[in-house]
Image (cartoon, rainbow, N blue to C red; front, side, top):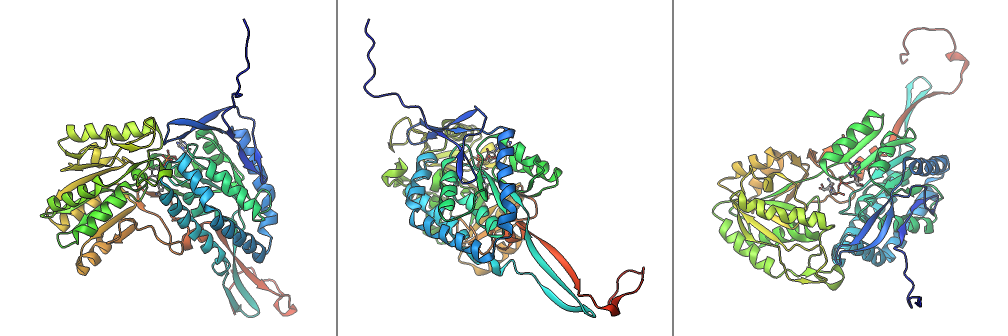
Amino acid sequence: MTVTTPATPITATPTIPHWRGNTPFAGTSTRTAPVYNPATGAVAKLVTLASAADVDTVVAAALAAFPGWRDSSQAKRQAVMFAFRELLNARKGELADILTAEHGKVTADALGEIARGLEVVEFALGMPHLTKGDYSENVSTGVDVYTLRQPLGVVGIISPFNFPAMVPLWFFPVAIAAGNTVVLKPSEKDPSAANWMAALFAEAGLPDGVFNVVHGDKEAVDALLVHPDVQSISFVGSTPIAKYIYETAAGHGKRVQALGGAKNHMLVLPDADLDLAADAAVNAGFGSAGERCMAISVIVAVEPVTDDLITKITERMSGLRVGDGLRGCDMGPLITEAHRDKVAGYIDVAAADGAEVVVDGRGVEVDGEASGFWLGPTLFDKVTVDSAVYIDEIFGPVLSIVRVDSYAEGLALINRSRYGNGTAIFTNDGGAARRFQNEVQVGMVGINVPIPVPVAYHSFGGWKDSLFGASKAYGPAGVDFFTREKAVTSRWLDPSHGGINLGFPQHD
Ligand code: NAD
């Protein structure tokens, strides 16, 4: 028998390493997870899953870098941040391709995500203005009091799969501009964007160890949550994990901001422009295949407009092209096969619970390989509020319609939700909109705006089970989170101030 060597050597699936001290770091763990291309269903890469010992090594690099970065001048930090901004803007196409390859979102949406992340880098460029302290002269004779805003030290960031670039960018530019050093634990489902951004920051001149990436699952996260050298945790993900992160990290003395899941309602009043409302519902419901924490998932329609609204929404849905994100489609695949199956399972639940399945996304015609994780846009009418379809965060291209008879009934429904991330009202009545912004129990409100993600110089965060901890992300809240205030009371020596006095200090 003759054995022939194959003409094309079999190449191993590439493995994504951690990033420590401005170089790739393999770590000691041998555990890995598959990273799929959701548009083909193929395993494209493997990602290393860190052990607690690997986390220790990465945190040690961040800790060693902290004194140098903390003490570097504001001018130097700003110069590096500016170079990073320029590089990211010039090369955003490369990053968009990485997002599409691992997340599946279409190119235009990937570029939109990067643009919103870039906004935070630009905000961080102006941070010296926000980290200035206060100064009070002569609070007592010859005594001055002033405050300093200082960085925390090593800060941990744990991010979800749905925005592999934007969500880390909500945090690390602000943390780094403030003088902290960072350990980012991105989602293991689409990990490459984190390494790409870290390498770009190194190219921009960021010193070794200031921005590090550790890949992993619960083992890596747990190691960060209890690590004595990690001062704070910024988390974004699902509500059960956000709650766990908040409780565990706070229990270990850390500052925590933990942003959770959502079920965003859009209230459509009878006087609304129904064409604009239908556009908004389709864009915000099916953009990024509904895998956005600010996606609209429930339309609360105040009668008698629902039938007309459904006609307009279904007309628009029939024009959507689902397929490979690189082919100019409107909507890409879901992140994994398991998640696609879970989301598709809600179609049977809706029917069993008495809702009307107006559009069933299973079997959608796709511009892509059949093996991708596809589900087409799906619409339910007459969803009941006791159905899992209404209660659960489905996180897919599924819109539910709940019919109500009045503004008050719609508002009460929104306020009963355990989530309070985003909401929107569609109306031409300024008084109703103003009343809604006052009465709704939700952290981010859109008035004729379906995805009201605040710009970078405001702050992002929900209420109720959509955010655990006191601090929102980026903007002024981000600066507060990543700095701590120190108050200094100072008197320069003068013999006239001597003498013994055991009483509590008073001012004269
Ligand atoms: P997820 O909660 O499954 O994972 C988020 C992060 O936590 C990942 O890095 C993951 O590795 C880690 N993790 C997962 N299980 C863990 C466990 N048992 N212990 C410790 N760590 C664990 O979320 P996801 O599926 O990646 O992202 C989607 C969710 O994120 C949705 O619920 C969405 O609403 C939410 N989200 C919220 C916001 C917001 O701003 N509120 C923004 C984006 C996404």
